[in-house]
Length: 264
View 1 (cartoon, rainbow, N blue to C red):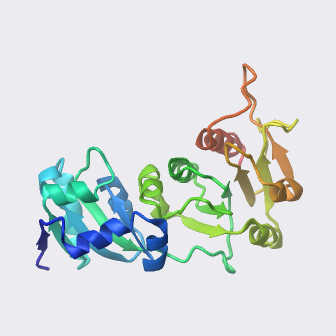
View 2 (cartoon, one colour):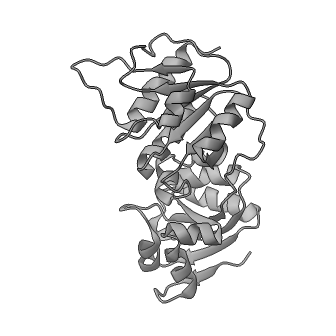
């Protein structure tokens, strides 16, 4: 497939790509951007529909980048070369490796998906970096189902994709209102476990059911009242020096590790 070049900042295609920085435009167009070699390795292996690959080979850091471009070529994906000036305008990073892709987002509603196995529920997580890190960490603990509850952060925000290192593309991810998630989980006989520093019960050595959902709340407000009322277990992380508040992604990582140790 013959490649096209974009070298002007006034190019209408570039203007469209820049408009995707806005959440409302991403949702309207049902498209978003994934920047970086590692992110796009995960994307090209996924079942997401990829529209275009944008490259600046002057920024490539090794032969791996060229090999990745070949993977896109082999799938007949449109490839556009950008000048360094144009790529810098589009890039989200201080130091980019010259690869950005445009992909089609998915409908994230739960509907009637027959989930099984552990689920991580990110309840009103505000910071894209925290949400992305939670996704990445969940994947490392073999949690393949993630639900954003009453989401205030767009899951397809490029910074979520970046901090997840592209693992957002190889998990089952959903976004739904908590009032719909709770009955959904109960119908599937899930054990709902919420993390709350005010609990008297430690997560240390806790052994979950095979199908459990771990709820992590925002740093500012913690878990929502609906999760407190509907949890089978409310647990806390043991900490020293009377520190009762952890970064949301750090708390999620500790909780997932404690449960992972005893999960069968």
